Amino acid sequence: MHFKYSAIAASMIAALSLTGCGSDSSDPSTPVEPTAKQIKVIDGYLSQAQVCVDRNSNDSCDSNEIIGLTDGNGTITIKAKDAKYAVIARAIAGQTTDSDKAGKLGNSYELIAHAESKVVTPFTTMAKLQNKTVEALATELNLDSAVVAGDYVAAKAQDGSAEAAKKAHLMARSLTNELAPSLADNDTEALSESADDITKVIEDSINNGDELDDIVIEINDDGTAESKPIIASLSDYLEGQTLSFVSMNKYYAQDEGIFKITLQDGTLTVADDTGASMTEAYTIEGNSLIHIEDGEESIEEFIYVSEQTSLAVTPQNDLNFWTKVDMSGEEFEFPAITQTMIADQTWYFLSDDSTDHKPYPMLAKMVFNKDKNVVISEEGEEDFTIGWRIENNELILDFPEGDNDMYIKLVTKDNNILTIVDGGEEQNKNHFSLLVKDKALAESIVEKWGEEI
Image (cartoon, rainbow, N blue to C red; front, side, top):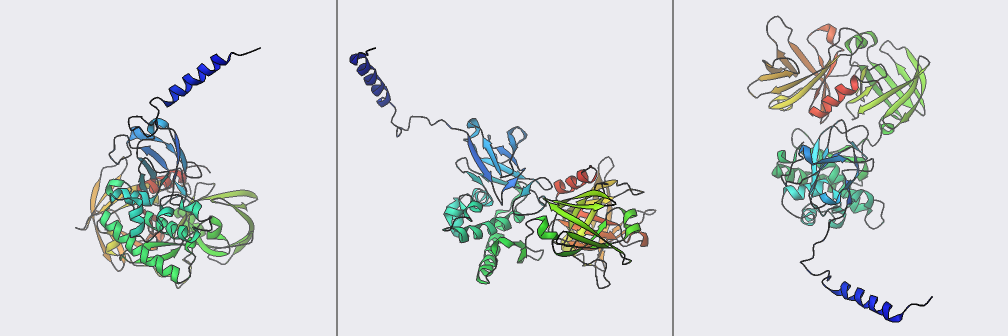
């Protein structure tokens, strides 16, 4: 078969003519069609963070703008039709996990990035809130701008940028504790001051030769910044440690008391407050401690982990409070509850309200005013107001005549949770309760507490 040269030539000429006509990529009149894209949501990589596209440009995650949740690597795909909008990511306490840390997040916050960014981070968020470029922000924070603008977690594995990336990651990890639950609630001036304080401690840590991947910089109640260890995994928290744990059910706590547990090389030893002990084998998988109890496998899921306060749900739906603080020793002293912790603060009171060994968790919102009144709200009940005061390092709630007042003692404290006991009555001495800062975290604890693992 033979093709005519003239026909081939004519076709090529026509094609070349069409290609050259009006297709100059530099022509500003030519629209660029958006394509689908993948983005990463990063403090560490944030999994199960809710992602929205800000179609109406109001810096808010509206219900009709939600597109889904990030995967285990913090990644989500933005469809082509939404690629031109800014992206908002909601890290939700009790739901979202961070590749940096064990357990679920203890505080909720929102991140935002402009449409052209491939990452959504604390840096893109601060830049947007302060109306500046990420590069300008990096200069202010004494960080490498190229690292800050991208995936600084991945950059830690690259020889040329590892140290700069570790520094950026530490700053990001520390800033998330200062971000508000919603973008609109952020105080940009206070956020800048916190960033400056964190920067100073990071520089001190570098000069001291500290491993930056092992710490976080926290702003204390008195406004000072302090380096603290992070718990990267449940194994880091438990392995080779001696801890205390106790049931948050009053009846279990009265029957069993406070246990001390030591975990070492696959063997755990549990001792009660009488000195009786038992030894079992154990393994740790993800956020779960697995061991044999009464001849059966028992899985305790740790839903919140910190040095001071950790919470684990048992197969019996009991909630156990774990801590590295030795609560059973005679030398234990209750820390002071201060005005700063309570006045002008909102806490969510979480306690087991059962009358037997079956858990019955209750949740109440407590809004403490500076005028020494607290408004208490519980679902299905009418709100009521009572007085509060602090005496002898205790928080006292003055209930109406006929009801017992509460004399609340502080047991442990971190940025998100106060673990407390009611010291007003002897029978309540081992009845542990929680004051939780974040509503989403409090609700997630209640949900898990009443759920079979």
